[in-house]
Length: 207
Image 1 (cartoon, rainbow, N blue to C red):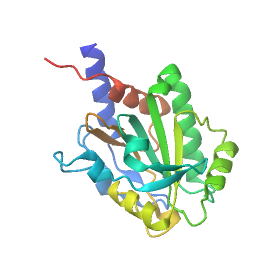
Image 2 (tube, one colour):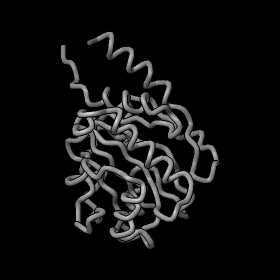
Image 3 (cartoon, rainbow, N blue to C red):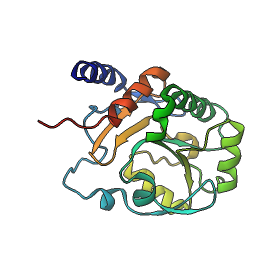
């Protein structure tokens, strides 16, 4: 088990390289060590940091961002907008392949896609996007909401952009309960992304 864990961590470090923005501009500051959280202050309460901002899922149901979407889960977060014709559909389908690679383990990992275009991305638009891309809705939440609410949440994740197409394609993986977060290149191989998630889903060994 320890050898497997060490191998997976070595692979994980290879994924923490700069990612490309949606418009193809490189964001050199968007890499992070695999054990660092998105929030720099480890002592801050996670609920207070991520906030319980009210958003809407693809079914039109109101959800609290931290308590209903993140709390206690292993998650993979990304940003999309439904009118996108290139990167968003490609990455969404790739994440579906990751889920298929995970097999039964996918039930332990929650995928979360947040809209960078809440003005146009209604719950109905999100649902239609999921169906068009043939995405499995189990353990996958698409989020939209009031523009101010989405801006607040995306800023907490370091993913806010002034325009829908300006969003980063970076993937953010996290073990929320244990404050383990890492960033993954969107062009990382499917198997590598799946292995990173498997690693985060492993229980932490205590001495």
